[in-house]
Image 1 (cartoon, one colour):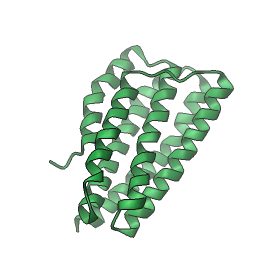
Image 2 (spheres, one colour):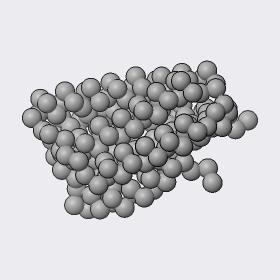
Image 3 (cartoon, helix red, strand yellow):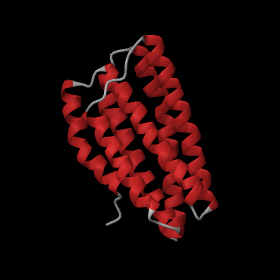
Image 4 (tube, rainbow, N blue to C red):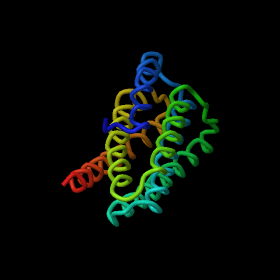
Length: 173
């Protein structure tokens, strides 16, 4: 099965996203989800920088580290400005757990097997994050600045997904 552990974790987290969409996560919970989701991709990107076989996959990993670090910096500055303390929740815990499991799996892989597993996960992960942003996080955000930040980063997530799909097609050839 092509789905990575992180992708499986996101599938398992989907009911948590759905449950929070019904009641709506609070802004502090949204902040924690955003920071956690970005950190998961930063950690995977750092591993790809070191372990990827393909220069294109290494470069993509570097881009994930840079872009998601920038988003986390913006999110951290915003929550400090708003005096909001990010609040841990079931969704952020599930994301963290899935990210840790994915890293453990990826660390065991080398060469083209690593590249394929990393890129396949990036496709699945970015699609899940975009879905969460669209269906849960933006609709639930009460603070206009937090909502604006989510809306501002969404196009970059789509770009990451498209780039990962492009790499995936190259690796599958």
